[in-house]
Amino acid sequence: MNLTLKVWRQSGRKDRGRMVTYRVEDVSPDMSFLEMLDVLNERLILEGDDPIAFDHDCREGICGMCGMVINGVAHGEQVATTTCQLHMRHFEDGATITIEPWRAAPFPVIKDLVVDRSAFDRIIQAGGFVSVPAGSAPDAHSVPVRKEDADAAFDAATCIGCGACVAACPNGSASLFTAAKITHLSLLPQGQPERLTRAKAMVDQMDAEGFGGCTNTGECTAVCPKGIPLDTIARMNSDYLKANAK
Amino acid sequence: MNVTATIERGAATAPVNPPEGEKLRARRPGGFLTSSNGKKAIMAVTGAVMVIFLITHMLGNLKIFAGRESFNDYAHALRTLLEPMAPYRALLTILEVVLVVSVVLHMWAAISLSRRAAAARPVKYAARRKSQANGYATHIMRFGGITIALFVVWHLLDLTFGVVNPKGFDSTPADRMIAGFDPSRWYVTLLYVVAVALVGLHLRHGIWSAFQTLGVANRDRNKALRPVAALVSAALVVGFLAPPLAITFGVVQ
Image 1: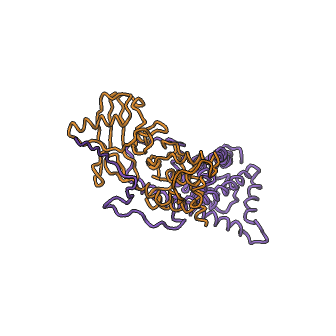
Image 2 (image 1 turned 135 degrees about the vertical axis):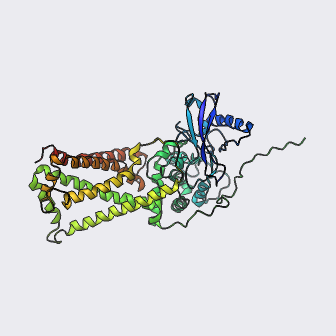
Image 3 (image 1 turned 90 degrees about the vertical axis):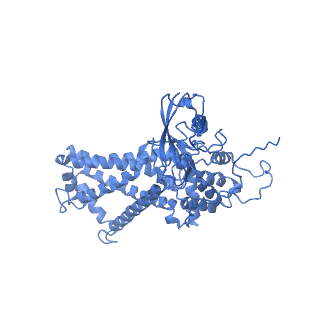
């Protein structure tokens, strides 16, 4: 496969950045998207050029590092996958592919496609925890949890914090991420004591970081590699309203 | 030979502080009404007030099919609600104030949230973005809102104050309505069709969105809430367009 890539290059935080066009030849359809970039980077290094910086770690869809917007869609058009799980066979030979970093003011570009997602860490620090004695794992069934709640909490807990929701949101909102974390804890018995203070602290932190508000477009859920459902946001809204009514 | 592998990665306990050289972005969170969720709740509640108004407004309009008398009697009845317990137009004025306050708050929250959204994405995407979710109707809420607001100005000048109506202010409501949608003024009818269609699109997303914002929606309830939102919107569009179209096409004279 021969491809034309239009990639966002930005040397650092201060640089304005620009789109740069690259030709990549003899791409195997069995390569993952990141492997295709590795091949391009090897060539760039051999040519004495600066390789394209992009985040990646596990390359098996669970770490949430490899965020990039491919042809205008976070993690590419393949549903419920991260960029590392996207393979080149989904692209046509001769295609032009646009690759951009997550675009959001709270996610400043560090270099090229790498953005600083510390804003998510600060949202978690604001309340994404349970203050219980940790110790060893409790016996199963020592605290009963309804099967439906356990399933929904687990679905929310699969969030890998990649930030695709923010990248896809027309408002640059972090609602799906924050809601996933709030839902994960607020459905379980251990999360009940801090349930309302948690929702308030995390939502207020989300605002303070400069993320936009949610307009319920559902673009976040559509691109979420873990398919976090939109009703987590309703649960967050409900908890936040209750916290403010107190 | 001494072989040491160094793997460069952040420790799990690494401090998560704002990046160096960047001033602390975090502002002190304000009160509920300055939070994005608070503003959304305002939009949901004020939107609900407007939807209830629209439903009664639409039902009232249908009186034109029962004749001019019936329509004018209904308009008069609105002004004499609760008489003689309350003075002429008392309850109607209160309802109008509630409605205007709702409209103003809805617009204030919308503008404020739009500005926040614009600030959250200072650099736009180069690639054209395709909606991955519920289509474009959910993405034109702001455009729809502005268009509807401009239409409401025209609508009030036309049928309430009679400024741009052939019959003027000193006429019965039914006269203004029938003269306003006269076949010769087909372009006015066309304007109403476009505007009401936009109201329908705005509400199809807006009604469901209000339930989501107020935390009422969930996976099971959405099976009912989404069709109800679509049905109410469709009913409002049909109900609002029936009188002007019937007048323009000569069914009601």
